[in-house]
Image (cartoon, rainbow, N blue to C red):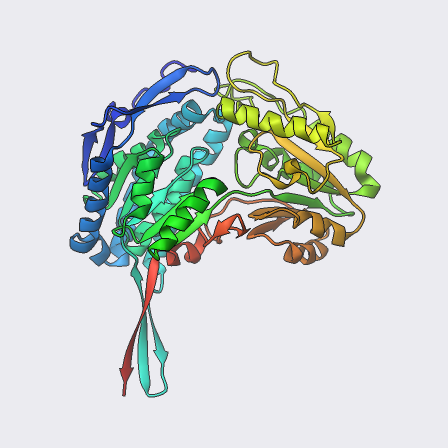
Length: 486
C-alpha cells in the first residue's frame, strides 16, 4: 500500500452517507472492513446502513422526484448540471485513481487509463440529455398524438466493486438525463467511489435528494429493491444475486436492468492477423486479473494453426508482469480476496482433473506471500462443456479452444449460458458474418472499444436491458401516448 493514497480525500467520505443533500454519519455501528487485496491488511472500515438510514435515502429520492425541481427541469438545464458534475469529477480523477487501486487492487496503470472513461461517459449522457427526443408527434386514424417519454421515478443504482466509478457513471448519467432521482448502493468492497461522486455533486449544486449514496449489506439491499417507492432498479453484479433481485422486483412489477457477467469468446479466424489480435488480447483477455465482465476469457483458434497460436498467446499473455498494483509497470495485480483466490484456483485445478493442460501459470504467484496473486494462466485441451469453459472465473485465466470449421467455432462461442460480448479477428466481411451468428449483446471486429455511445448488455443469463447509447436513457423512461382525435 502506498502511504498517502488517501491524501486530499475528505474524512467524511469514510464514515458517512450522503442523503438528501447532506452528509450523515453512519449510526448503526455496523462496520465493513475494507481489506487490501495486495497485502491482506485492513485498509479502513466503512459504515453499513441500518433500516432507518435506508428508508431515509429512499424517502429523499421519492420527495425529490415528486416535489423537487430535477424532473421538471428542461433536459437542457439538466445537461448543464451534468456537465458541471463532470467538470468537478475531472478535477478529482487523481483521487479516483488512487481510491480504485487502494480498495480493490486494480493496477494503477489500468486505473489511470480507465478512470477518465467515467467523465467521458457522464459527458456523453449530458450531451444526450440535451438532444434526446423526449416528445414526438405521430399521426392517428382520426387525428394526431404526442408520444412522451417520462422519467420512471426514483431509481436504485446498485454498482459492483470491480469498476465502480465507470459503471456508476453509465447508470447515473442515463438516470439523470432521463430526469430520475437516485439511490446509489455501493459495493461493500469499494464504498469510496460513489462517495466521491456525491461530494462532487454537492459542490456543484445538484439539488438535494437527486443523488443519495449509501452502503448496505444484503438485508438492507433487499429492503431497497423491495420498496414500491423505487420503481426502477439497475444492477450490475453476479448471476446469483441478480436472480434474487429479479425475483423481488418482478413481484412488484418494477422496472429492471441487469448486467450479470459474461464468458466472452475471442474468435481468431484462419486469416486473422495475429499481431492485431494479440494487441487486443494483451489488454482484454485478463484485464484487472480477469475481473471484468468483458474479459475475453476464451480464445478460439483454428486447429490448423493451434501450436503456432498457443505458443504466441503464451508468450504474450502468459508473460504479463505480476506485481504490486501501485507499480506503474504491473499488468496483473491481485484478485479481490481469499474467497476469489480459492475460487479461481478451484477452477484451474478442476480443469486439470478433467484432462485439460496448463500451458503456463496455474498456481499462486511467487511475487508475494501476502495478498492474493495468481500467475497469468493459459489452459488448452479444455472440454467446452467443462465448468471452466462455461462459467465466469473472475481470475487471470484464459482457456484456448481449437476448432475445425467456422460452424464449430460459433457453436463453441455459444455453448455457455452467458452472452455479454466477444470479438472476431479476420477478414472484416467474414468476421462480420461470424459475429452475427454469436449470441451476444456486443461483439467487436479486429479490436475492442469501450464506448458509451452504443448499447451494452447481455443475451441469455448475462442479463437484460441495455446500458449506454440512447437505449441506456430509454431504460429510465416510461412511454405515454396523448391522443388528440380530430
